[in-house]
Length: 256
Image (cartoon, rainbow, N blue to C red; front, side, top):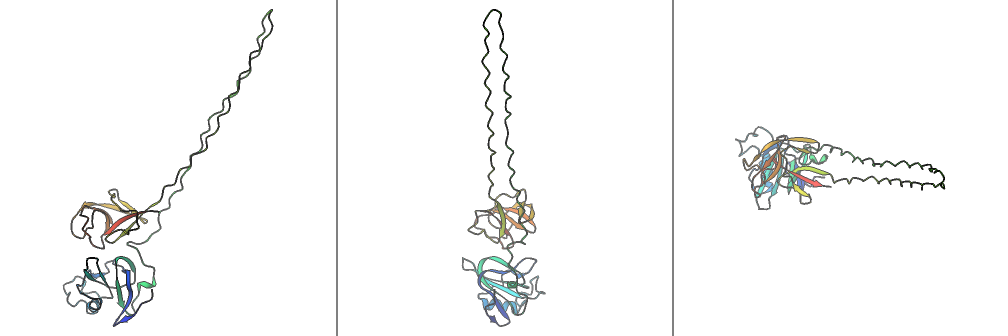
């Protein structure tokens, strides 16, 4: 995507799009700088860490920001150290970064986790047809000669018709179930959507995530269902109204 315009030391990378800088690899300086406009969000990045001296990332530079508004009207300003990798987001917003820095729009955006080749599904094996044995024909008995009586011949035994071979039954190939992860909730076009069974671990896009436990330990945990965090998959028992945090990625499944 071509940068739209330059505002001060920043260039707008995405003007109104559900895509922004990746929050992976500890790239987020602060999840919400608590400002009310994109201009104030830019000033917060330009003057970082002014007003946030106690932040654990105060010694790192700010290179980009993402300003967006939730459906409930709450505005958030997320600041990043850099923006060399793109990632899909849940909400539409404006992304800006320092002019001249490595831009994520030079590469393909990533999804909620590193993309790997999907496992190859083995082709279904067709069972060999069962052939019923064909009965051998019964030999004709030689006629028995009687003394002083006309000779009679026993009627021949009819041959049994060979059993027809049954055509092999083809196995129907069931649709492939794919798993992905997203921030806050699954896309509307996913069916059946949210994963609710992961106690045995979950295989997502080439990576096996071991089961880490269940519960509703804090407000970062999303609503009820499976989610991925820190290389493991967990099952949340939180209420449906709890949204969680974007780095606690919900597990979604889709039939295709």
